[in-house]
Image 1 (cartoon, rainbow, N blue to C red):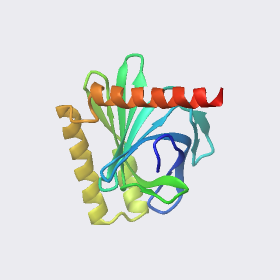
Image 2: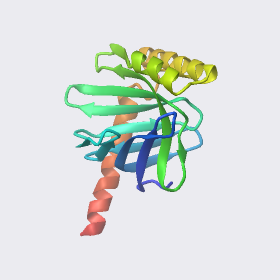
Image 3: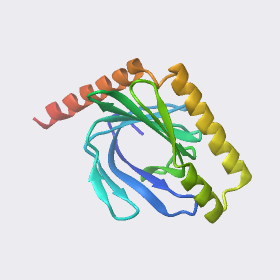
Image 4: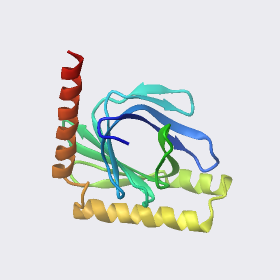
Length: 180
């Protein structure tokens, strides 16, 4: 993937069913350790048929070797992080893809946090037969995210998000100038 490239994001469930798609994300950085994209005013389609548009810019971090992704939503009151416990991403030329494993961590601008969807994880784990290895990876990844958020480890810091958001703005300005 190239910097500035527009890509789709597709999230699936363990049973292979499509969970959620984002129609547009802009690639900001792609290394062996991390893929960074921005979504802004992107159309999102849910598996239940609901379609909505993202309201604020979000810098998103996907990892090829980590069982989570991190979405940092830039809001008027500060940065809110929404972290999904998910399989490592892959890119197949069509979209950034991963499997969502239900457990989520929401980190608020004041540093407080909330663990979400534990019941959904238990239900889907039973219904979709998550292996013991997958369950352990999911809980270990959630603990890692909590520790990172508490310690302010990047990307859980304003400087990292500001850097990537300004990179996105400069790419957007270049794109607009090229259309003139």
